[in-house]
Image 1 (cartoon, helix red, strand yellow):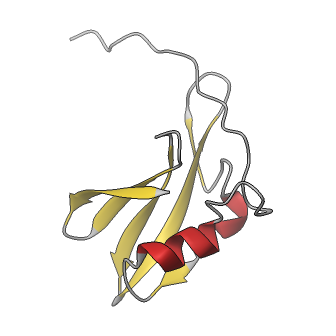
Image 2 (spheres, rainbow, N blue to C red):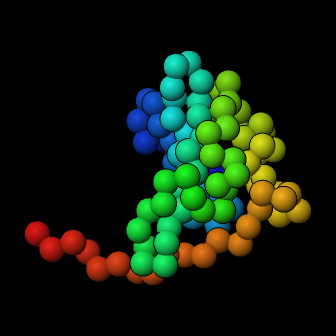
Length: 94
């Protein structure tokens, strides 16, 4: 797992393959994990995806050792799932 800062109060959570599996949002003094999944058409499913059972997990800080332990970065961990990429989508027309 890795995180990429979006702003002072939010980070993207990426699995070991670099796929977006959720966000960490700073809410009322804690970091809350919000799982993200995608349906077969590529639409976002809030609370879904490979880490759906970890949705709303709270962390005191952005401690990567703890985040990896809890979110299951280890392939032998029961929270680890093979990631299915959403289908490619055409860019929006302007």
